[in-house]
Length: 210
Length: 407
Image (cartoon, rainbow over all chains, first blue to last red):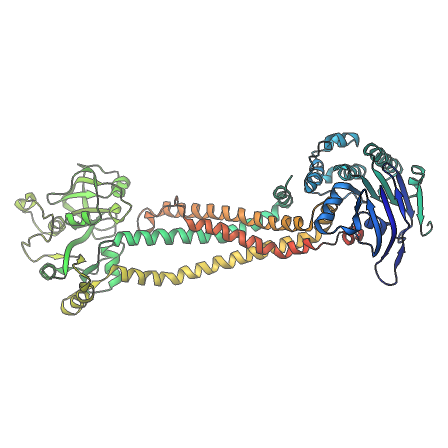
């Protein structure tokens, strides 16, 4: 379902990245391990359509992401790709539930599963709270819920566990895996965090391990 | 969730900033609102009061003062004129109609004006209660006078000499109220009307009971029993030629002066215009500062919000939606500012009117809404749009990947 081929990308003439070809079926999971500066976030940005590669193709389902642009790309991303960042980045003026509804609004989805999702991630009680009243672990779960709010085919997670303790880190990874399986979505986690390796066997390593 | 709600949430998240910007804009727009309201009603009222009066003739002096005293009853008369000379003018073939006025007394600050029934006809005044005056010392009250002084038909009162409210009383001749006028929203509302004879007799020494029982003149000049004076004449032209010849004739060939209400009033507005312009300039300066304030607030908040904007993009928001998001914030701010500004303007005028029961302002109303106030809202929205244009453009161009990888 996801196939990445012959990607070439460079920020400037000195820094070019080696980006491996990736092929994932629906429901499959992949861990990309690498130390800082190895270009793993760049891969994620290219996969999510946040950066345009200089050459090569990124195909999700039947859509060539690298050929989309403008509002079309934004809508496609909103609808089919859920992105979880290292920091939760919950929109502070909105409540937890409104953060999910905003994601629904931008792609015109109804969001029937929002409350169920919040329940499954254990933050249903906090749905009317502002992000400032949440703990780090709760906030990260909200950002996962938001990434999943539109039922994406591909879930991208950039260092989702970096700022969490062992217990929360393992909870977050498990939740991501569970939800990905439930939606039959492809899951890619990019991290330098060795703890995640225990959970996902399918992994590639970029630029050697630190 | 929609764009409007999203922008609103971001505004509410910063209540102090938002409140300050709204208040500043509201202040500027309130000043404009008050100016518009006063100007419109003043001009309306002034034109209405002078309708049907082509020329005012009175004693020599300031023509503006003559108009203000004889048409609007807000300034002191320039003096009196000899009635014989005035009567000779009424025989002029250029004059269609002439209404004499005799002034000099007041009751509790409301002017007692001696005239004839033509004066009532000039303003198409209607009697609400009782009837018009027939005998000397019969008076008819304007609606506001009757209401404020709580007087009824059949009551009597003693006038005071002079036009202000603190002068000595004519204790010998009480006035009797025979009628009360219906409210007409013109100058008659604040006047006490009577016959010329009443004004004469109240200043005479001694009593002559035969005279007091005789009917008063209802049209034209009353017959003079001795050397009599009137204060001024309201005059209507017979033909357009009169407008050219009559004022020149009166000003050069008689001891009286003639003044045209329309000319003097436009001169007055010209004089007031300088002050109005000054206040308008101040209001515009405040509005510009408010616009700048909104611009700076949006621009500054953008720095902290670049991350939020990038996150919205990853959630599926297009660049254009982010543009709209920021513009909406500016427009919501200024729209609220306009509503509050207009409300403050009306409130301010209401207080102003309440504190001035007599005089020029008392006839104004704060409960009038003008088409111009809709323009104020439109204008405010334009300010909001312009103030948010640059921040919105910056939001439009946010590079998501760069923003998200920054921290």
